[in-house]
Image (cartoon, rainbow, N blue to C red; front, side, top):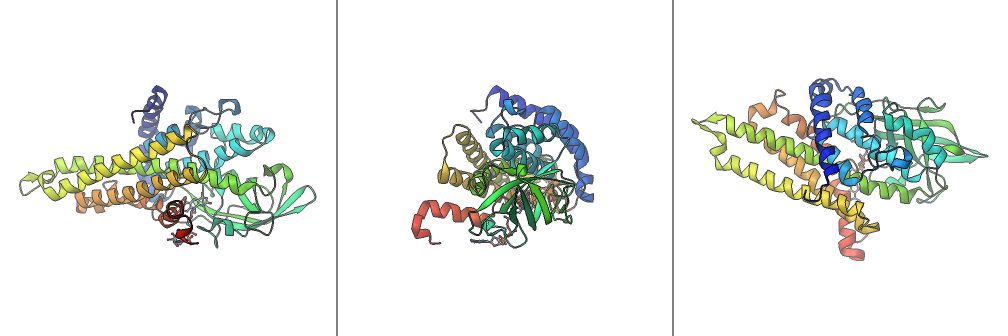
Length: 385
Ligand SMILES: Cc1cc2nc3c(=O)[nH]c(=O)nc-3n(C[C@H](O)[C@H](O)[C@H](O)COP(=O)(O)OP(=O)(O)OC[C@H]3O[C@@H](n4cnc5c(N)ncnc54)[C@H](O)[C@@H]3O)c2cc1C
């Protein structure tokens, strides 16, 4: 993008190189076996990627949302699973602690999360409340200077094997009475439940977080009691912008593989790229990808400049993710079609790209919920409930 700084361009090269050496050689096997590239997190720590948008005063790299989106795009083009785990760690856990926690909490948790010694995640979704996040049932009941938590979070990225979780729980009866807690694996009454087997993003572990009379000290609560809805919503906006980077990466990789294949593969004595129907798929994919790239980085840049506040921020983030996520799934499907039978078997990566791309139409707000957000902004009361 024309507004990338020299620092952004350097970061892009660094993450491209990291992805080629630390992610590419491992992803096929990890995808097949549903493993996790744990070592890559130590390397990301060394490269300063884990605290990418944390201010330098808090031990981070002090970069911005454009930089985080770039990192997602570069990793997403090679290994979307690790990019997703990176997002959960960096944007959903580390960034939330940096933005909302006290000095003591930052000193206790950030250094090991930023170095990669600890893996972080975020617990919002529950078995009975996904899109309706405020309908969560996990409760934190105050007892003196402590809270007793009961409930289950589900579909949590980095749940299995994770160390630190930024979790939301109800601290009152109304939907808005919600507080955030930092929970560490090993705390009595807290367990990471079962690991799910998935269609895509298979090298990003997903599982449950279970609270059974789990007692947490007041020192684990982040911010004031009942103050977390605002934090949660603001974080969803930056999550939606940066996760769109993963969609962009998947689409770019799909287009690269399909373009090369269209040049190499011959049928009827000619490269299949001469056929107009193949050209139509490739050109539509390239144009849609560029449009989504412009929209996503525009949203990230506006976020960084503080030009988006409240509903406006939510709408831009929703538009960027709604388009990028759908685009990546369709572009990966088109790549499979261009490769024919070779697209459907695992010797080429495009079938993995499609399986991974689909997740981004569901996680961090489904396509339907994003349309609801945009419709409310456009239509106001005429959008209904
Ligand atoms: C691999 C993976 C990783 C994830 N990681 C995390 C994580 O780290 N932390 C976390 O907290 N969560 C995580 N999630 C959860 C994710 O955010 C939810 O799955 C998502 O918000 C949708 O919730 P749900 O699955 O309960 O679907 P539901 O909310 O039950 O939705 C089911 C269907 O109904 C539609 N629907 C619901 N409400 C409306 C409406 N008002 N209008 C129109 N349609 C509607 C939905 O769009 C969807 O099509 C993850 C999910 C997956 C699959």
